[in-house]
Image 1: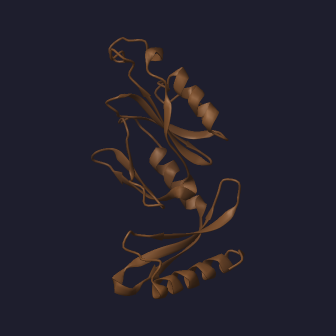
Image 2: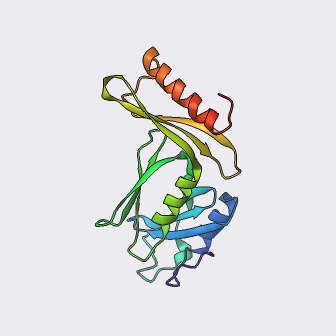
Length: 194
């Protein structure tokens, strides 16, 4: 898929240049985002999620008000994360917001879709599911839980991850033992050294 959307509206040239300079493969889909600060786009590539923002130029020139779209501020990469960094995503249909949750516990990224027909939620789901080779939930003392997973990068490299909430104390010997045992099982099942 090129940079043109289904409705003929695509990102400005400066945004397209930034995408080309930051991606390693083809764009699978793109979606314009709602923002109060200019133009923003989400791009799903085979390897990663990119979010590019082009703020309004000083003086507030914008596309809607008849200003030159190329007069916006310099576009910048707001998010550039590989699919294996995504824990999960939730879609709030009423608000048309896709919320991406990260495995490292960073604040979720909210992508406010602009209302046009978009396959971004489906592509995001497919890419994240592709990155998960094996996963196992781990029940921990005190009713807490974690997950261990073997994930895949775009180049095919396999690696293991431990995903737990902020209430999971991995320095606790019993917790560490349960997580280590689960991680060894999924690594072994995937053919990785335990």
